[in-house]
Image 1 (cartoon, rainbow, N blue to C red):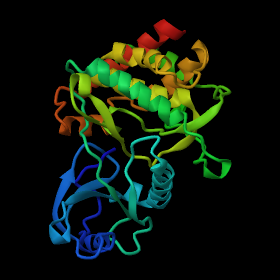
Image 2 (cartoon, one colour; image 1 turned 135 degrees about the vertical axis):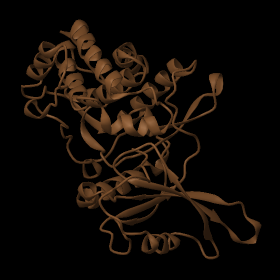
Image 3 (cartoon, rainbow, N blue to C red; image 1 turned 180 degrees about the vertical axis):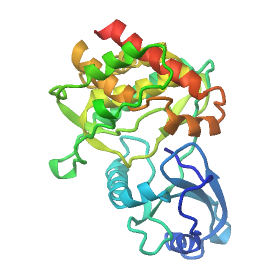
Image 4 (cartoon, rainbow, N blue to C red; image 1 turned 90 degrees about the vertical axis):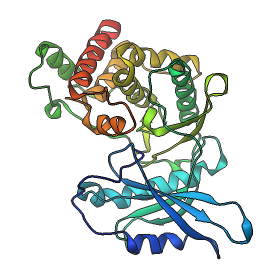
Length: 326
């Protein structure tokens, strides 16, 4: 969810008040010299703010997140407050994350609820290329590090929430495999399995991780978008990244991610039947065509990810999950 800055958001207010507020996050003598829209997300509008410093000091950049779409604007106070709290928590450096610079979760001084944070190096890498397996290993290791974060009871984020339910799954209209969908929906029509909770990113996937380098120098340079941070089962974060990899690179990539996570020393995962529950609970939230990630991913160059292809990959992934875990 790195954000988008185009299309119709249902709120056509400008951002003059927001930029005045953002200037308040700067040191004396600093000024914003350029504003660049950042692509690659769905829920928020993101802008890079280039900042000049006085006395010939090197310039730097900040990132401005604003919740503009009406639905997300309504939920912005809780989401932005949660992200701000997590960014403060992560200042210790166990996970590469931005530093909080300013927060207006209610939009009191801005045109829309907003947050300013430091800009992280690197870029989102979604291509199918020679680095794809190495990126998956790095994603697994980074997710294991997130789950290893130890926080006091008073610092724990909210309890995890499911993003779909049996009665909410949107089965593709013209699917040739209605029985597969019925089986998947039936499999999540139960109580959530017992689990040992841990700190979750909750929206961890390749679109929310930045990389630098290539080949042997490839490295994670940042993890972004902490608005959904939760306290719950590690399986759910693993499931979410697995589904994204299956959609980006095919079912095999999604199926293998849990093995990569275990190899990276991640938290213990549930046994087959219960692990399948978490995998399906996440995958079914993408139905029917993964639009919330597909649109941003296409903006970032993956124009091959058509609705038809994504639906097929999602169905193939569901079948692969049953073949392995059922």
